[in-house]
Length: 284
Image 1 (cartoon, rainbow, N blue to C red):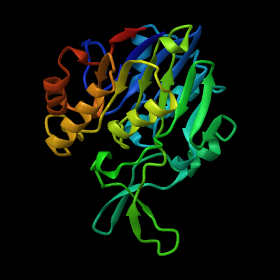
Image 2: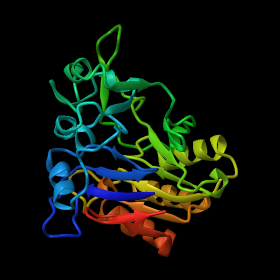
Image 3: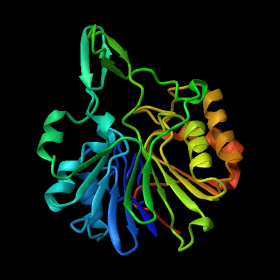
């Protein structure tokens, strides 16, 4: 199995684009997959520049319905009109950020779900992409371990007033790169809004006793400014300790982890954590 970072907030190659978005290219058992689509068409352009078969995608996995992860989906689908799109059913909710009386939608609208109705596989808590490649949701919700960012809202069904969103759109991939599942799994997420500690607890219970070879993704410790935190340093430390206690052999951080968040994690995880930048590849 090979995972290539198509795009994120940094680039390891000056010839590649970078943006406030995330997209991974996955080669698994002779087929190609995309996990998250980036903010724009730059993920596709980077794939072309890296000479990756971006027009031979079997499925696209959208970890949650935020533009930095779904904004480039149209560019991918133009090249792969028959590709399946996996996304949690909760992503159909109209999630927004609000500032005073103004509301700004944060993801794809109903038009996307109508347009790609024949491609979309909307699942609730669990789905199989193929043998050894699964999608699941967070099943453990200790509120103290959930990401403290509370800037996302939906309209209450009765009062229509804004209420905090519960991130029922978020999922993560669990991939088994070896022939024997007991040899280990790789966890790939988008932003870990539900909290790394909660997600790792779900993994521990659902896949009991199976070692975690790697945890890959953004951890939502920063916003568009990767040099500052959008949460407390204590929350970053709590997440890093959970990763350490999980026994994960490696942690590859991207995107919304941010530089300050990464440095704090590095103090706890040491050589077990690496930054995973645009253009870099991992093999398992």
